Image (tube, rainbow, N blue to C red):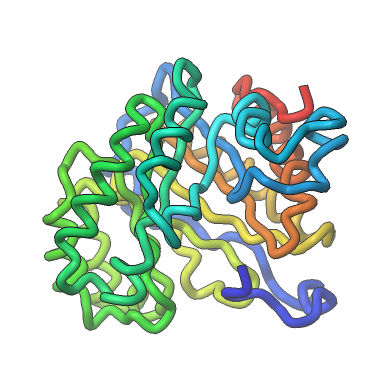
Length: 292
């Protein structure tokens, strides 16, 4: 979680961490408030010992962490698939969530994105997609994160790669080099993602404000929010995100995924709970608190 993180948390007090304005043409992709918008809020891990006695019951064993996580949250950013795609694991995880409304959001394997950089990855992509499809109704939105040094000069490569993905396989794309959000490349990239039915990940991290776009490619939103221990700025930022997402729901966003991440995940449930309560109050939602 070091991408865009300050070396010293005191630096956060000197930064403008407010959200930029919405992109002017967002409304053209929306058609008014939906009757039942789907909103998912979660963390990026489920196996944290400090959560036992806090969000998990006292005495919870490591082997039961996932079951407890599924009881307390409605989604997870599944980073495990970035490192390994093991069939036995995927089938086990799928079984544990079966019958619930829980959503897995798997991260594309690093061989695809970081090692091969979208070249000659047809086989591993097909395998990744097939394994994710084992989640059935519990599959949320997968996400493809490209490296920080992967610039907009590779736009054609991204478009060619996305053509390998079945159109009914939900995918969000995280681009982290500033060039994707500048000039003609910004328009070309977002128009391409829109035409491919893909969502553009919104990355909110302290030292990379140039990439925190507020531009839609469809009526879905996928936010990766970097928090910093228990710094006061986390809560101010979460307040603003709750207000912004409430506005988007009123305008017609149909599906939201919001993941709070930090280097020390001890505090992640508390901050997710704070955000859920704030969003419920503002948007009239009934997302379950992880502490109920």
